Amino acid sequence: MAGLKPRKRRRKANEEAAEISQLRRENERLTRQLTQAELIIEAQKKLSEILGISLESTKDEGN
Image (cartoon, rainbow, N blue to C red):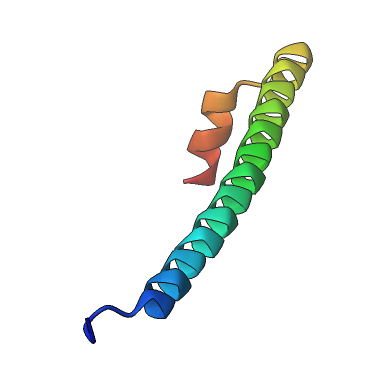
């Protein structure tokens, strides 16, 4: 019986729950950032099409 320490288990479970909660919040934040980045990229593509700018030639000029 001395080997059973429910407080440590509870603390560990609480720590794991806190970590899961933190990871979920981070995942939601990163998902929002990715969605925003994808929207920006799509807008840039459309703008380059409207202006007649070739994205391929822009890449070549940078190298």
